[in-house]
Length: 238
Image (cartoon, rainbow, N blue to C red; front, side, top):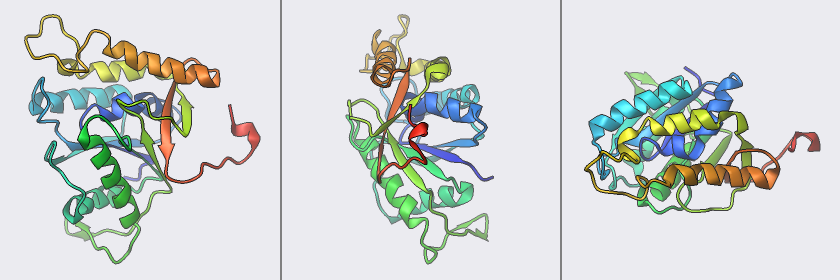
């Protein structure tokens, strides 16, 4: 299956928190979008890997993604080496996306920055024909995405561009809240975390509102780039 956009996240819920609105919008526009989670989030303070598996499947259904896979790297301990790069290259060559979205270039959780660089490096290496990969006994052809964009997570990184998600904030919120074990629950006896506070979801909305305010729309999500952004004409700017 060829996808238009492939979204990578170090943990289940990264894609929804960083780019859920953009994912929902692109799917509504007719794009085929998939999500690849690098880990199962097994080191998370709340819930469990098995719970996160179910939550990520529910979130994928809400967003309407065409496919979601988990590479089962070690949460907290995966590294940017050949073995991990090869597994990501296999996904890129399998789905042949034009655009890849991945973790923030720098963030509070060490896996986010690591995941960002790992995926970015794999995107380049995937275009080298002398790197051979096979899936189910079939040799894959080289493939390099045209664009690699990094969504914004905990830290307030200044975006290089924003996407208007004004009509998709509800889908983003619903997909995030599919991870019920991770967020505020007054009946939970599990330890509190930075994202389980009463105000965390409000902060997600605030950031989207603030980025939207800066460009004259209701809500927006921000991304950083690896190369200059080009437009066909000035009419494409909003």
